[in-house]
Image (cartoon, rainbow, N blue to C red; front, side):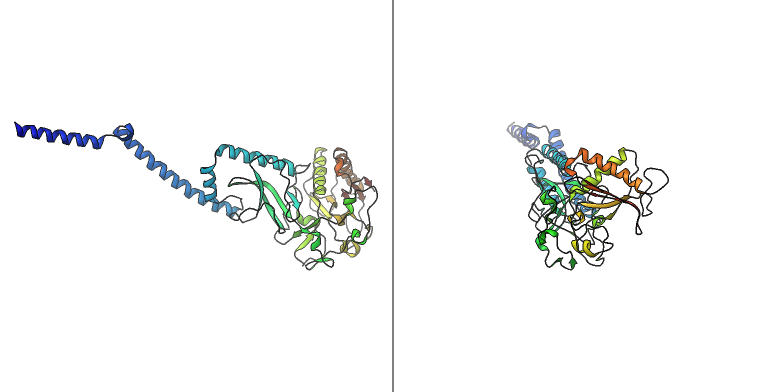
Amino acid sequence: MADAGAGNNRVERTVTAESAMERPRLGLSPRGARWLNATGWTLVSLFALAWTWSIAYARSAAERGVLVASPSARLAASLTGRDPTATAYLTDAALEALASALRGRSGKLTVQTVLPGDTLRADSVPPGARIVYQSKGETEVQPESRPTTPGVRRVAVAVGNALKPVANLNLITMQPFSAKRGGRIGQYLIGSWPSERGARGPSRAPAERYANPRGFIEVTRENQHTPVSEHFRLSDFLTKGQANVWPKYLVLEMRLVDKLELVISDLKRAGVNVERVTVFSGFRTPSYNVGGGNTGGRADLSRHMYGDAADLYIDNDGNATMDDLDRDGRIDTRDVRVILEAVDRVERANPELIGGAGVYPACCGHGPFIHIDTRGYRARW
C-alpha cells in the first residue's frame, strides 16, 4: 500500500509539473499564447519588410530627383513624433499656404530670388513647420535654412525630421551686386548702370526702380532651362551675345514674369490662343544696351537693363513671327494691339504692376512685337 501511495504521489507530482509548464503566462490560455507568439513574429517580419522598402524607395526617389529625408530620419520622425497624422497634415497645410503666397498674382511663378543669407518670408507657414532649401540631387545633404552660395535650390517644408518639397517651386540665391568688378563678373561682361554714374530716373518713377539691381542670377549650362513660371525659363531672358562665356549673369524681376503670365491668362479668357510666347529681348546688360546688336531706339535708361522689361510676340506655329491674333488674315501692329488691350486690363486689375507698353511694327528682319515693363508708372507709345 505504501508503494502504491508513493507511486500515486509521483504521478500527482508529474501531472502538477506538466500543468505548470502548460500554464499560460499573463492569464492566457495555451491557444492564446501560441497566437501571441505567431502575431509577434508576423509584426517583426512586417517591420523588417517595411524598413527594406523604405530604403529602396528613398534610393529610387533620389534617382528621380524627389526630395526625401533619409530612411533613418523618416523612421525616427515616425517613432518619435507625438502625432504622425497631425504632422502630415501640418506639412500639407504649409505646402498649400506657401504655394499660394509665393506664386504671385498669376499663380504661375515657379521661382523666387533672394540674396545670400536671406530666406523667403515664413508668414504663411503654420507653427511647428519651417522652410528649408536643398540643392537638386542631394537628398542626403542637410537642408539649408539660409543659403549663402549662389544657385538654384528646391523649396521644402520641414516638420521635425520629416521633409516635404513644394511642387514646382525653386529658390534662386543670387550673386550680390558687389560681385561685379570692373564691369564684369568673372569673364562675363556686364558694364555699369546709369545710377553708378549718378544718373536718376524720372521724378514720377519709384526711386528703387532706377537704382542698381539687387543682384545677379548666375545662369549655367546646367540650370539655364530652369522654369521661372508656367510659360518662361531663365534662358528666355538672357542677354544676346557672349555665346561661349559661362556662367552668364541675369537680372530678372519676378514682378515682370508675374505680369506676363497675367497677360497670357487674360488673352486666353478673351479667346486668344496662346501656346508659345517668344521673348525677342529680355534683360540687356548695360554694355549690350549701349553697343550690342541693333541699338536704334534704345533708351539710356532702358528698362531692359533693370530686368523688368521684355519685348515679345505670340508664335504658336513656331515660324518666328507674330501670329494673326485678330484673325484678319494679316500680320501687323493690329495683332500687337490685341496684346496691348490685355496689358491695359491687367494693369487696371493690378496697379502694383503698372508700367510701360509699346507697339512696334515689323522692321529690320523681325516681325511686329510688343514691349511690356513694370517701371512703376504708366507709359504708352
